[in-house]
Image 1 (cartoon, rainbow, N blue to C red):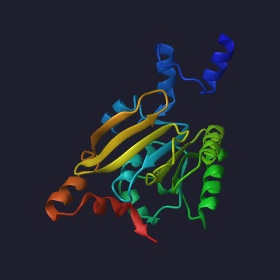
Image 2 (cartoon, rainbow, N blue to C red; image 1 turned 60 degrees about the vertical axis):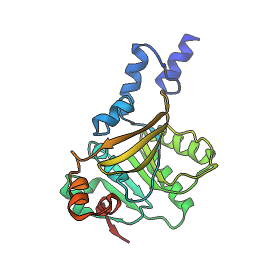
Image 3 (cartoon, one colour; image 1 turned 180 degrees about the horizontal axis):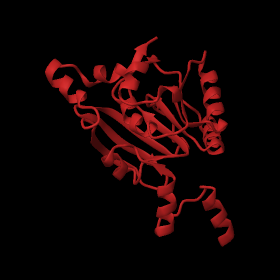
Length: 231
């Protein structure tokens, strides 16, 4: 029995909730978000492999939340079905290597999911971002399997859908705008508990969030759209 448990742990199919070994294995499977406060709440950061479900409205800072982590990666980042074309100039100004960005604009939601699955299991992408609508359990399971095959992480960016039920994701976060960044609710986390809402101060990374808000009286969502150039 012990050999079976050890084999399952090596495949990241069982997480040991207590003990030093379990904590060490869990921390190795995470990557820092770039935000110390968020890393504390997630006990290390985003999963390196799996599916992260982000319930968010468009343009409230959701891309800013992911950028510090994405910029640490060596492999490709696939961006699928974004709400607008990425602004390469703005991304380059903050130090993003845009040669590692792969933007994909599919013709329909089914093609978007197919593209995400192929990118995940290719082994060439560290991360895949996809803007999508409601999903079914079997679709998420396919994406989880693809992520495990290619050792990659999928970030689902979408509005919350009532009555959808619990999906088999590695991490689920609810995002809403805050004057200094984002309000974040940890809805589900592999190997941990859900957490109530907390405010993430992003002004150190993005001082223009608060500067423009106070000097120009612009709402945070307008400021957060600068990394999209339009269709």
